[in-house]
Length: 290
Image (cartoon, rainbow, N blue to C red; front, side, top):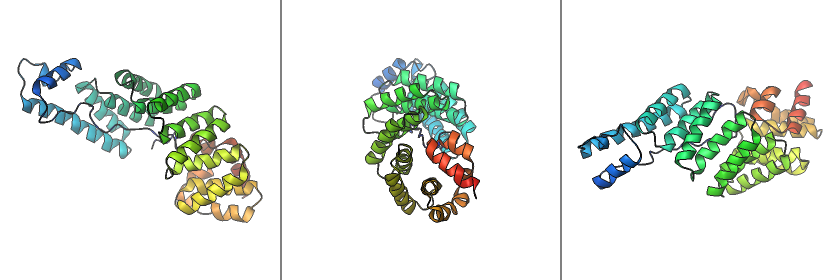
């Protein structure tokens, strides 16, 4: 996960869009490659063999696997180089553009990332993932309306996508519309009950809109369920402090710093994790008196 948008989730597209293997009619394959404009594909030659085609797609597939592995390991510059090589070989592949955009978001190259996502969208306008990924980049630029528009588009193509709802909730919160954000987080949590981030976001948004009792109930349940996840435990400490439950707030806060010391940094909570303002304010007051 990139460090800027902690609970806005990007999507890597793991496979080559046109993977050609044995059994596919060679004539159809050649036509497909010509139609995609792949000047560097062996099919552009006067004569082509099945082995040459196999070798070409094996090279592309290897680049994809290396790019995914590097991204998952957090080696984003290395991953970007693999996706760039894949794009040079196969420029009509929207997955490579979208995945390179993700690595650029993780390096805060937001304008370059958006250019990659634009290309992915142009190549595959009915695929939701590039819209989701571009929305995250727009969030990084605090272009909330553009982010929301991209998540709206993703939900047209997949109206039951919990990631799109969660991410749109993040953007709605960034725009200050916490009622709308709460509805989106609730929908994401309903669609994916095991989606911890969406459930925490929903509980936080409830506190922001004034439903303190339900927020507290949900956070207590999440702390029991995800005992090693710092986010709900830190949030529970904040909302308990806000209710004057000092002892319980202290007992929940004690393990947090050992799990993730960033939660002691109010600026990180407000600007990077992007907790709702009421929760940040409560935790800030709690930390000031410790």
